[in-house]
Image (cartoon, rainbow, N blue to C red; front, side, top):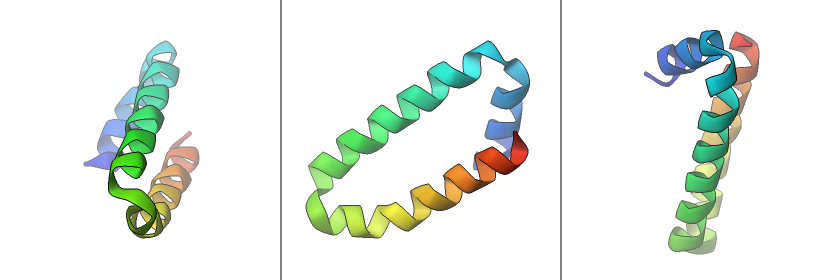
Length: 57
């Protein structure tokens, strides 16, 4: 799902930056809510998602 959505956003061009900013802000808010333990759990997942997005780009 993430890969398909990212591919679609990438092709849209101008929309890509806004979506990425929104996802980054949302992730930061979740990190604040979940605390340090949440950070350690989510960090590897977010790194993987970023890698996939750059590969599609």
